[in-house]
Length: 90
Image (cartoon, rainbow, N blue to C red; front, side, top):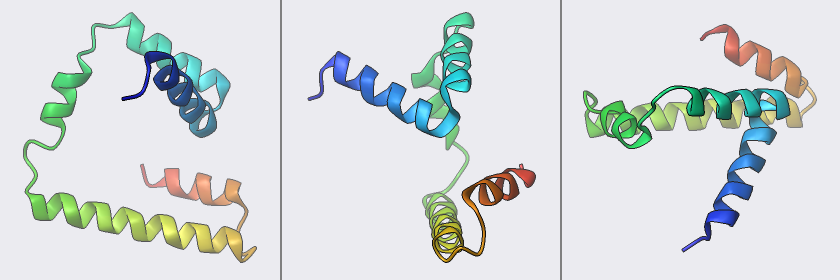
């Protein structure tokens, strides 16, 4: 089992890596500002989805991520282009 300090450190590293420092801090403030029950949210997150739907969505996401990695690795696109193109559909 990981210690609380290690979990906090790894969590902050992941947030900072994926969101950047400013957005990571905003995310933490948002969680602290409102009453948010992560456990309840997690329990209800996939409530209406079948196991097959969850699997298919995960497989689709994995394939999309791999395609984006290949685009960056081959020099076809920059990581910034991949990022901005990926959020255009949100």
